[in-house]
Length: 376
Image 1 (tube, rainbow, N blue to C red):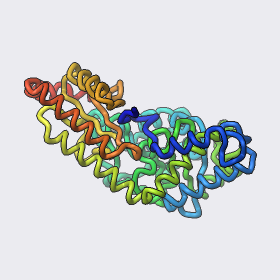
Image 2 (image 1 turned 180 degrees about the horizontal axis):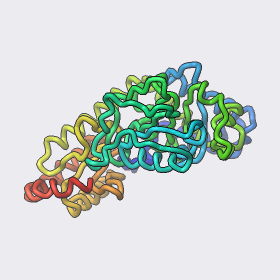
Image 3 (image 1 turned 90 degrees about the vertical axis):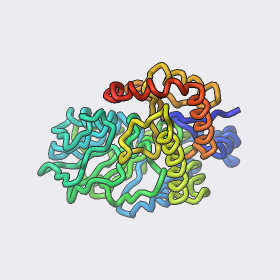
Image 4 (image 1 turned 120 degrees about the horizontal axis):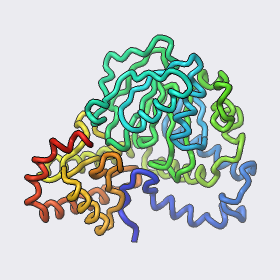
């Protein structure tokens, strides 16, 4: 029996995709071998990676003047790759909205001046910083944001306007979850293990003018965007199986109705769960309502022991991955594309039962919420 998987990444994949991958495990479309075994230079894999690029272009309506790269190294690799490729004048601006934007800014500081243009550190990263009237530093190579903060459960509902300075976004935990106008950005990148496929692939979508110039001389070849673009993401052996799995997900997304329909479903799931949290006398949300993430819903009882008891109750009910990130505690339900509305309803039913069983704890949890909020 499969569980309801609310893990933040690696995360749930569509069952239809898993079944197709299982069917093709030993023999991919009559070639007599698995995708895991085939050469990345083979005509079979060439068709796979070309189809993957075409499908993601179609899903996001990516303009022709953008390149799509399939890279390795995960998000941590991209924290370094972005400045090594784009920080050509040695200055960049970062909006620090949470753990992942902060890690990116700290990594970039190794390669140049990484200014903190705005931050929500003062409120415990419970919201996206106010970016109205944001002015990039004169001479900045780019402005960097994390579009959705997985740990803190916040997201941008409107992206900063940066004028002629390219806007760069980490979209790992919201990639292909709803429509996105790629033309707003100079570069977007995302690790696929949250919404798109198994860990091991990073998709980079970069505007032509930003990839024409060489990277900094210190850049390892494996992180060089121009090398990747010039070689069709095949300069070295890519994670072939993972790219194949991503394209199965791309095709599944198209079959579901594309980004408009997927976005509608994801917003419906999030709205249902937030409504339950807001109506609760025991649970409360930890993100500022104006910045709430559609993908990662964070909440708590305000009592660490009760939080742990709820996580255990959820697991016993077949609901896994609801424990909050170790740095903030509480609970987190990640509502990625493969998580169904029925999964969310099952989580809400578990919350209902737990709240009934701990009705007497609601008042004490409420009184302690103020003191615990600073650690969320």
